Length: 305
DNA sequence: GTCCAGGATACTG
DNA sequence: CAGTATCATGGA
Image 1 (cartoon, chains in turn cyan, blue, purple):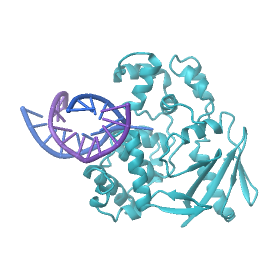
Image 2 (cartoon, rainbow, N blue to C red; image 1 turned 90 degrees about the horizontal axis):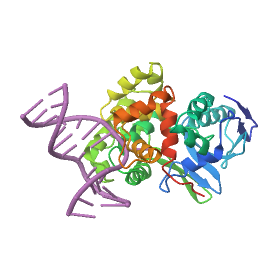
Image 3 (cartoon, rainbow, N blue to C red; image 1 turned 90 degrees about the vertical axis):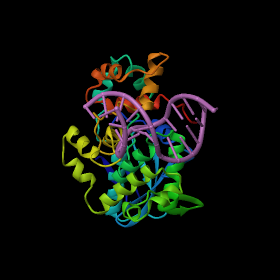
């Protein structure tokens, strides 16, 4: 982690293959997003750190991210944890050079890595959020998924307010472990989605499920197997969590509808590619399937000014 | 009205 | 074991 503490603010120095603006485009993909805000090109987010909620804002230039604390600068240890959080959020430990080399000769990836150079997988560092967001998004369109998430966060999460703006923090698993299926049904969750979400919360609340626990298993396939043992987490969700939370660049949600639509467009065909065809295309992506998927997702939406 | 959505699970033959 | 029904609702 490459950063510098200036007491009232901090600076983070990302690797060369980084473009803050591209990340902002991704973060702007839904107007219903409640877990961060972009105001005049500045990114705001509140996160829980050691039983407190910290609001930070990020302004990015070419080679440095500047992090300010609008409410008040926190203690040194907290500042360090915020830097660590942001480092992981933007997946700054990953060296993209290998991916770009591989993509430069790949018929599918060549154009997207040129178009979106510097884009990184924007993560979901909180594994409870990653697991439950994957569950919420299953089998429904993204617009409705964001509607459900917004209701869920505003019903059970906590928030900070600053200068008239509200900054929401994702609900804690301890809170969700205690609610009933009916309370989520009222938000228009299906009974099954509600059961899955509460089940994950209860497992985490009992300490049966932790991010560190998965990471310690080391091997991608072993972690995927462990994730799929959770009720409500199938192959797609497991790969989604590996990709967005556990920094596994080889994670590949091959059944993803968004991936299929992006490939249909990139290939210029009238139908979606079959799983076998995708597997064939992806042979060249070995080790970087997660980034290939993320860049292809990016190709599905237009820039937001 | 029809069909598809960032799928997963329970049931059936 | 592979195929099928079911979930719940929004958006195109």
